[in-house]
Length: 327
Image (cartoon, rainbow, N blue to C red; front, side, top):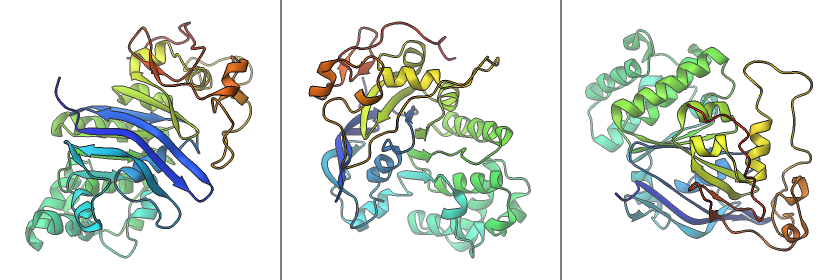
């Protein structure tokens, strides 16, 4: 078995209020798409920003753990060395392109900055490269659009431009943080198809952060479910969606709208995720868990392998299938 492209072990991130992400471990293979799933506030975005050193200085910091890209430890790199990893080896698609595309720079100039810095291309070569990237991500008339400002593009086109910027230097790993948020359903489907097509054509690996299990079912090979800063369950997509072991994973699946419609109110998970600095003792999900027993209040369960190969951090894992396997 070949070594993973990305190997994250025991990653822990803390703030002055307490631990935000604790003991997070996962791997991503070459050409693989891993979905990092959970409610808002579960630590998904903090995890992905910690991987590439984009945590806000002075408020969050990596306090433990290892992040290896092709066997090279990157958490301890100095800012200059880490800057060479970002963009060149790891690309980032942010949640809101309007907040991360410079409003006073043309799209082509923003792509050109990356390729001229990392690839050493001249201005003319960088422009030609940018036009080709915009064509690959499906932006019509790329030769004209490369001179557009972000506000002159639709939301879907801005997201495509963000993807082109992330892919500009042909990275081996792309981190996509909620890439379809705030897009209508039709555009969401187009963006997801685009990401998968890019994966197939370029062989790029992806870490996809989302709260939408429908997106996971369409795009991912494996899933890691996060709750309150820890991994609750991880495994192959079909196994996890068809037969979840952790009650939190089961609850997330129950909350998904049925494609064929349903009767009555959509189920929800009672309560709220805990905040950093006020984590409950024992299993962090136990205050909201319908399977909670006294042992759950006493200590944190370890992430253990289950009979089907998945891993779950639960003393009393769910065994009943609750959803047809995703395709």
